[in-house]
Length: 319
Image (cartoon, rainbow, N blue to C red; front, side):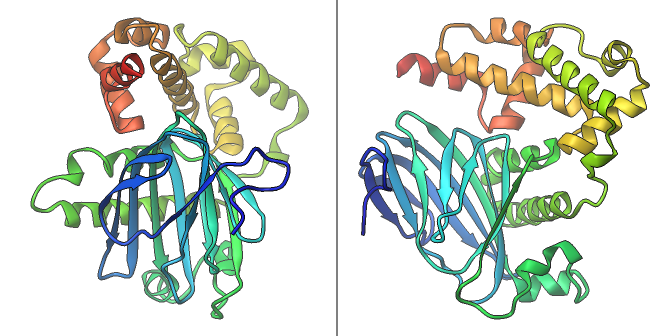
């Protein structure tokens, strides 16, 4: 099998068989992963690893019947390519709903990236029962009863709730005597949330008229450049020249996030970038992202990335 794509710099190819919890000790990769199967037919994947080199990781499909799955990075960046060549960027700002029957999907990893990844999948038969025998219409592409050649993928922006659920799969819920019971419950909520986001009929960008779209663009640029300032919806709506309700509605239509969730997302993404550079203290990053109290910042950061800002900073300093 080729170890690189055409017109790309050659990189190492690693084949990963996800058969239970184990340390990842493969050429170019170091970390850990866990695959949990539940009686409901659902499967949870949790992975945390560092790319020591540019490489591709080939994943073998474990299903032998129709299924639907989800994937999201809580931290880091990679690319996922299906056997048919379709490629998706995986970051903390993108979620993926998919069904890929053939084996051979590949993650492209970039040297130095620390990846925290979560995926939840379910075979269609038990999932259909949970929808009282009828899946939402937008999931029709996933309902083909034949198994073998289907390769479907759709990426979109995750909600703050989806990110929080992903983070919950790595915090204290992943420990204790009842860990598997807790993880199954959160995995159910994670898959339900991502399906609802995918099937949301309220999203229609055509409803946004031209001047509103420009105002929204101006507001998002203002947010990006003033992360430490007053970014309350009242202040932003006044600047945009519209009501708070309308501005919040526009954010939900275009980004699947409320205005407050969007602001929090941008602040957390910037905080992660600054901490990974290792040039600022946790307190300085907290202030630059608009948090008056470091404790509030630390809680929000851990809910988003599954680790404390101090740990991110230590890793950057030791790297």
